Image (cartoon, rainbow, N blue to C red):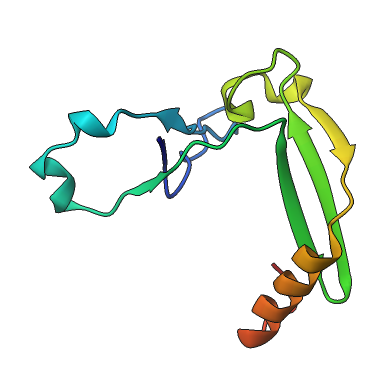
Length: 109
């Protein structure tokens, strides 16, 4: 199981934005203290990289990001060394994205 944060860190005095990366957690260590606020947990899924999809109007594009050292979470490494590649959005995923944006009256997401 992994834990993800809801937001990143503010910019430091040099203008760099920090990040808090996804991390593995052991559900056997959970206790009643989790009840005091919201959390984002999900099953860990083996992966080959991370893809970010952007829709702007009728245009949909995607980029795959990976750390050159194979880091589990690309946000942990040197962001200047990340590997980027175009990624084809599968038709069913694009259709679902457009449907979701349309349902909320959005043209960007």
